[in-house]
Length: 416
Ligand code: SAJ
View 1: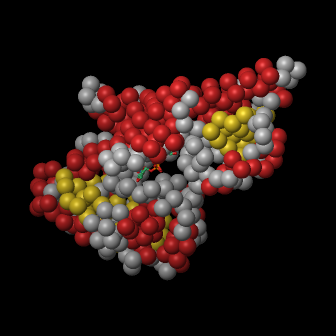
View 2: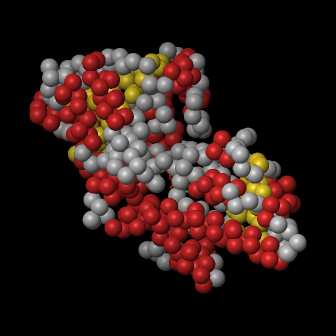
View 3: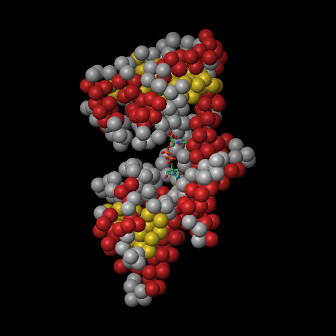
């Protein structure tokens, strides 16, 4: 099989490399010259454990090469971003550009797979764009199993940090626009996937992916709401959750600083945008999780105010607040859409000195430039801080309770 991967980001690059590692010739296409050059040099531009070695070998073996322009192939996989616009409406322009890019090189017998997380109807829309660009070919929306080009939606569901393993082990949802498309896509994924490939239609596959992440978002919102209620009654929410979870049919997730990353905080909006009247719970969960960082900031600020009122001779500018963790979740270095980063930045605007502790990075992101925030080693931060806010449950912080200097105010929103 000759496979073309359109979009070489967090999903596209590992998927491309995996197909190449299994003996398929893979052409990776990306619009960013730096990405193309980096991959062709056998290197990677993203952070994901184990990926660099696989890409290096695939490029060295001549099985993977990256280009800026689409080339003919047997199958095309589209893994481009599907962000939302300001008003929470999905932005399909990247999918449209990808469709326009591959349309000229499509040949009878090709399979086009949309892997990007997409709002309901996006696969059909992509097939329409392809059909408009190539009136000489037939597509499944009109020709079904007999179409020249088959189209399917097979959403990715891998967990950042475990992508290489999950790409192989996870079950895949295969949503063909025709039975033939499902059959062709299943045969292709079976080249690398050890999990089950489960057949459905494209619309159900789109909804399935959105529902998986919405389900997690709603459950985390429940945990976050509990943490705020428990704070009011001075109940330890982590003890409470572990007790409740002893019930055989209860499984509550963990509260935290908020929901970060680029999937769980985005995908539920696709459902809300398309069914605003009906998706009430999903909407409320999204708002609840988005509001959690402000609640955490307020808790931290109130601890700072307590220090000031206990020490009238001190001023805000000489109070030191340690923010433990900047990443969007434990034990990764990914700071994108991170509630911990947002909280830390907001602390920097309060006027106190902020000691940012993030053992997984070497330098602070530009987003924090110009604020009184310094990247600080854990031991130094613990020694100097008046207030410690634990924002991410990194394993480096595990023993914090044992080494915490006595009398330091602690705001722990992750339950160390
Ligand atoms: N979080 C909590 N409490 C929890 C679990 C998570 O506050 O109990 C927070 C995390 O700290 C983080 C956010 O939620 O800020 C999201 O983290 P995550 O580990 O739940 O998920 P992601 O965004 O890394 O990856 C998710 C996964 N989806 C599900 O688990 C249903 C992954 O399988 C998807 O492939 C990925 O989204 C995606 O690309 O859509």
